[in-house]
Length: 356
Image (cartoon, rainbow, N blue to C red; front, top):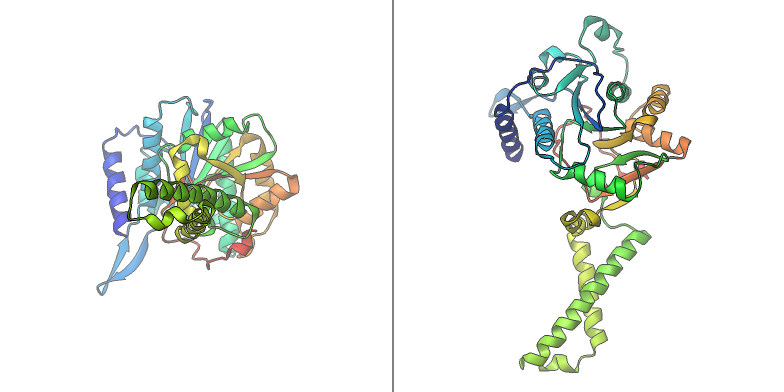
């Protein structure tokens, strides 16, 4: 909570340093963009008991997410997605009480799903929370599609993009020729760290094998050189090099397993060319990039399906990819940080088997 409070204060300070352009609540405009980013949000204020007092805790997720995106927009001088648009999609049932979103409407175009009485009357109160989440996602996707752009990045209101996230996305898309390809549904920018560890597959064997060979070679070479110059290591001179290599390789493999793949692979963030593009699991919609040509069909598919605890919006989107035979892609390591501690859905935690 302390880390969240500090990020919240930093985000507010940054926004206060900016001029207020006084954006109006609009649906779309006629300008052509290279990338439209839509932040899906709803009020996350929570009443908590603290020292026998009932207080409302302001988490400020939306402020942090919006401030980071605006900062990226202002600091990005590269050729990556030069014309960018930021839209806040407010799906709260009482948008007039969502003061955080109202304040941020001064800095980003804001669209509210339930901004009038007729829209609130159309809301089906018998609908379960997962169906409502799906319908809110459809609304925000359709809102994004009203802005002319070839790509739409849909993010939730509790994620922080890395400073070079858009540059990384552009590099990956260019390197793997995704700008001209039409056989992919989405490019995922985030997958939960807890499910990014080593598993029983060929990728784990290749990665651990590579690190073990590197570690074993370095250990054997270093110990051989040291033993020639240090008299206090006389016994090492008689040990075969292959033995030193095996010891180093085993130690490296155990060290990687102990540290965890999520952290071992973080070295890839040092260079754009080191990022990986892999097949994406079905889970999670914290940050996904969609090509414009697929949005209408995806929304129509989502509108036809029913969501529940075991078939939420992320699984429904994944199902559309299977129906159409489209690729689902994931950038590794993550270029987005998930800061959410409190969910509006209050759902039970799911195991990874739901998304395999």
